[in-house]
Length: 269
Image (cartoon, rainbow, N blue to C red):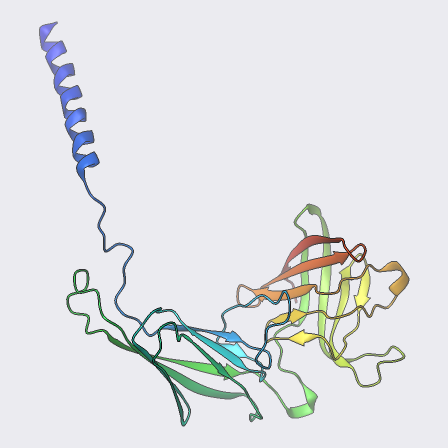
């Protein structure tokens, strides 16, 4: 019996020592740190401004409307942007953003953007970091000028459901480069959305806002407007390399009330 008790005691003492040693360990302070980096994200910037409720998203392919380049490194000593033959320098702290506008670009144009960042390195965690990093990313401008095509990735049929009604499956079809056939819109062209909500087909207007894989609806132009709710400020965005469509509905009830719903669907053609 005493032999068994000693084994139990020994086991308990071992557990106590193990737990005590774990509690005494200090977390590595370098886990959340990183060497100086010049990496940056690219956002579509629509003519230098973001529409109300527009959701910024990172992309390497854009329409020829403008770019917002955002460095991941903050509070650096200097940021030097090199875009084509132009060189942009920001030496003030938090000078992480650069906006590029397009006047005109050839079809399927691409160009490199380079960022050089200088910042005091964390030598305690990264003794070999010299505090200077250079990063280059090639950006594709998806604009097909031939035949009046827009170059948008928003096209095809997506099957899914509202997130609050997952068992009620329906399809949404996006058809780009469609002229609005309704009276009063002789020059309006863009993406027609079949069955956007509750069987309603929505025709394009020139006030709609487009990114390469993001659309922001401005105004209501439906095939049957009396039976369709106002969906002004509803947005559509492609995710998962174009395989998933997310629609963030803004269903307007009255001047003070709107209902938020979301559709998620997978591309079927």
